[in-house]
Length: 137
Image (cartoon, rainbow, N blue to C red; front, side):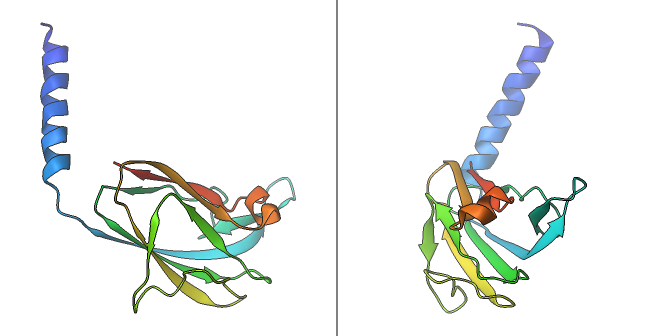
């Protein structure tokens, strides 16, 4: 067996052992959702000043905590597709819109590996860039 293949197999075995034995984590994110003008003079929605929405990466069992400040001039509501929303004292963003200037915290349980996504409930906001990927390993 070639040396490269052996190294790859060793690395994959190490990665599987590492992924399987990892303790669940609390993954905090702090987002500021705002409107910007892109280089083509189009209005876009940016998260933390970036037009491309961030990809959230987690492991099974992790709790994802996303604090969202709405700096838009209108309300916004995020749909978290495929992940279980956790309700507790810290997490107040269940089924209500985020008003302009308001901050809301979402807690999501990453119980099952897979690819999921988030987006605005408003098609105009989604088309303007408020959508992203969640990867659970």
